[in-house]
Length: 77
Image (cartoon, rainbow, N blue to C red; front, side):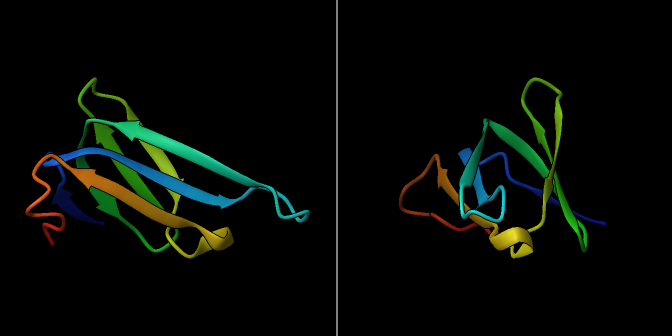
């Protein structure tokens, strides 16, 4: 898995369909620090030392959004 530094983000949210009826679920991670990108999951370490394992973007209609601490530099990689 490839590791990335995402400590410049205030938060990141993953939205995906949670069932076949089209309901969606939003999962927010506050103060993310590091990201590991795999083929089926993302693993995100937050500032409290908790690792979150989330279906990767595209799985189950998953989309990702985030906000950087510096609005003039919204994307780091």
